[in-house]
Image (cartoon, rainbow over all chains, first blue to last red; front, side):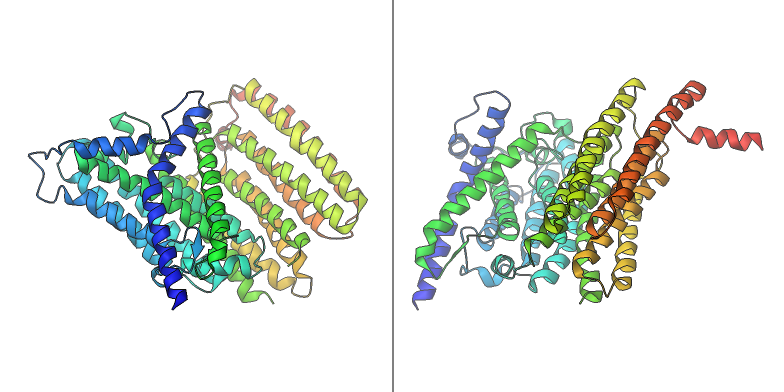
Length: 320
Length: 219
């Protein structure tokens, strides 16, 4: 009984922190990027102010759009919110843990992407369609790479549940495996592309021809735009949590043990700050790729994922 | 799994990753950076193996790798790139995706060949041998799929890194062998460097597809 109650509390805390903290993470990344580029950057709370301002404004509906137009940002936002709830953050053993299958999470990301793409196609404007086409092209390779990685994780951990992976990886003395290194490289490439960061898409860019994710939001305004931007922030947080849960699972608290929570929370915050700092550093030191180079970049990720499973598979079949 | 094994394994994995990523790079500058990273990690692996096996000569191998391949050769390669004005040169011989798929197949073959034939050996050396053979094969592949002479040279040097990786993983490899291989590579680099300059004097390019053309006309 107490265990369930604690799990419920942990789940609520996780949900509250993630849903409320996603804009803060985005603000932190923006601030870090600006600092590294020698600018002062917007204050940390600027994303909250932007969201609040957009919520006050009227949402304009284009004449050419169908009735579904306001629905797509909401669908994307909801799918990502569910993904954020499923992926373990500061502790394992949340109430949502049994549903946190790796394939489910990929599916939720795909759902959010499909909704965003349909939103971009909705008005029939050129840039939205171009952005959707590019996103579909990226998605084709990104999802392939993620599904190939599934094989490596399932072989290593014996489960495809992200919560289970986060429990098993630090405990099972897997050590520093070459396969995991390849999987990490592949996953980082996919994460950068999926969350619209620099090698694939410039989050700070305002040139319509080069946009991917932003281009699909061009026709949105007011609270619909706020929803779409909030979805992007949730996506960044979900990816960081996913990478943290699989590749940096040490020090995560157990939902059943109340005393391990403060340490878990602190470590979680530390990991997020570390990943955000690494992201900033990577972004300011790399140039954006041409759109048609991105499939090649993701193709490398796909092959790295395959390499990870090749090593595991062959070693498991032939090894002792 | 001990720390010795994990760390040696990880360093080998990074070297393999560098070798694999060299296939995906179009620009010579990126390939040289990857080669330099590969050599530096190789030096670290040699130091670690020297510490783990308690072998002093492996420290010398590490020092030679660090000085020669980590600093001197990349500097020379960059100098050649600058001198030949190839900073913006882009490779187009074979689609990158195809060469990467070939590379993946080669790694699979290397693992399949090495693991059964060394079934009696310790698991520490088995996977390391598989990684080393993969790096050698990837270097060979790089020499095949590229047309630019300098890219082929980088493939050759990368292949030699695989050999050294195999040598430091096996206890009891005499230092003389490694030393002579290192000297050989330096000599090969000098010879190829001179060859490159001659090549450019005659053909104004380092694209070796021109040579095939001449050969065909000669027949």
